[in-house]
Amino acid sequence: MASEPPAPVAPRRRVPRTDTVLADPRLSEAAARLGPALVKQAVHQAQDRVRAGEVTPDRIGDLAVGLLPDHATTLRPVLNATGVVIHTNLGRAPLSAQARAAVDIAAGYVDVEYDTATGRRDRRGRAALDALRAAVPDAEDAHLVNNGAAALVLAATALAQGREIVVGRGELIEIGDGFRLPDLLVSTGARLREVGTTNRTHLGDYRAAVGPDTAFVLKIHPSNFRVEGFTSAVSVAELATLDAPVVADIGSGLLRPDPLLPAEPDAATWLRQGAALVTASADKLLGGPQAGLLLGTTQLIDRLRRHPLARALRVDKLTLAALEATLRGPEPPVRRAVHIDPERLRERSAALAAALNARGLAAAVTPHPGAVGGGGAPGLALPGFAVQVSEALAAPLRRGRPAVVGRIAHGALLLDLRCVPEERDGDVLAATVAAARSTGLVDDRAGG
Ligand SMILES: *Cc1c(COP(=O)(O)O)cnc(C)c1O
Image (cartoon, rainbow, N blue to C red; front, side):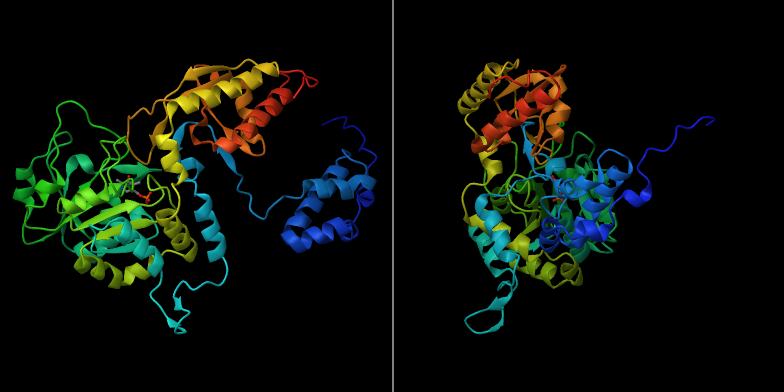
């Protein structure tokens, strides 16, 4: 503290005033586009840099322009090079181009609950519900809420408040970030009647528990873990023989069986086996926006739709639009990533590695299993490949624009192209080269 250096020769008064900087036409144009707050924020950052003596005052306009964000959201697009298809931290399912276009249309005034033919009110989200019923003909009716958890909450509240839900002990799962389905169910005022043991539950366990106080029997697909060894669980078909309706949470949102994912239940099969109600997420294997699907009998769906809580869990128009386009439109990116031809993945990886090698960067193709992710098919390895590069590239790649997120394993960074749209392979290459240059791993003057 004794001998502080003299203050740099940039006293406060030499920092240009905010109004003066904002008069720059580039900044007034930006204020019209981005809103004044974000532009002011960039100006304040520029003033701080001038005050700190990093930049001379005459450069403040250029600096502020350079600090302007591109968009009014700070969410940054990520190229998912992890090989994990449904990556909760990266926003689960990416939407198809058609679903994105639908969101854009729905963003304005739109006939979401209006009949343009008659000029009267119409049932909200009719088109999305029609698309869902068409996709799952085994469901008599359908209803939509905000997410899979909300679907369970609505079912438990409307059907089981003050009564009992009979559920297998091995199916009481934590779904992530500390949220547990049993807590969620109990929070509705329903009581849980647990049956069986962690690894084995039999039909007799359920039969002994079902009684006059039973609202429904709940079957939950353990979507994020597997129990192996001495195990047994009771199928929906068997549960359907009990004297209570079966509510079944498939989680992953597969509407029909997928031969590549034999252990994943699907809505059509469980409905056909006798489930009165199936619940699922829309942003897992279905590949749509965040939403909760409820599929089942007209009688139960009607009770859910009329319950006051349904209004609080109502999905917005952006979701309705994206879901309809996902159901009626082209194959969503999630399905493509799960079903990608490993040979094609090998070719793309080899092309990326070769291009990196040509720019003086060590890179090699290595077998790398993809994963469905927290959204389903636990433990299933999807055959595939990745490009192995230096771990030192991981941080600059994450910080780049777009951010590229790979997987660090055994002291290397693995770039798996499974979840990268093929037309973006060039962006992964460019980002990796830029990251290598920023870390000095390749010479700045090297070609490319
Ligand atoms: C993911 C999942 C949920 C929760 O769904 P959200 O859409 O994340 O709310 C509930 N049950 C199961 C079996 C799940 O896999």
